Image 1: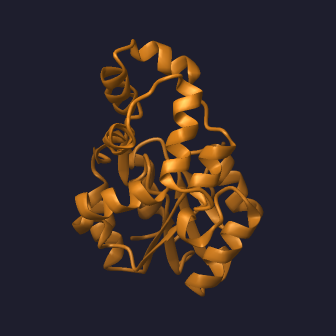
Image 2: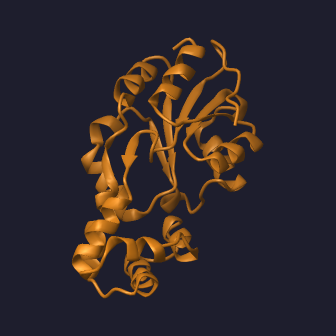
Length: 209
């Protein structure tokens, strides 16, 4: 997927996904934790796990944590407790994406930064505490579990653009998933697919930031 042709003065706001753009994610850490508690091989759980309808419902806040963990029990065929599921669920956060902190600090001095993440209540509670200073660069963080909408749905982008109060064409959106980039562009945003913080750095340079 080609990146947009960015130029100085082409944006009034920057919008960032969180997972694998700002915060590093390692889902294998959740699998390893659950497998330890369940006394089984991680590979068994990898083969069974899918991001199903319950996963999506959890991300938009329409089912409880307990209900989602019940669905995981059935999906994975293990009988660990809610507390053990939560331990693994929050173990996916592997730190800041390398090099992102100074880029956000630099960008925040020039224009407003916002974040938009498909996520769930336990993850929000966890990363808000663990990464507070880094996330402090954002004026607002739009969360699927709070707004009841998730990427790449058109309604989700429309909601966030309206909340930011800047025309979609004047927002540059950073995300690591091609489907989310395509969804954003379809709604009129400029969008950059992120594979590493180098992509963010290159975009900021192109924008004259």
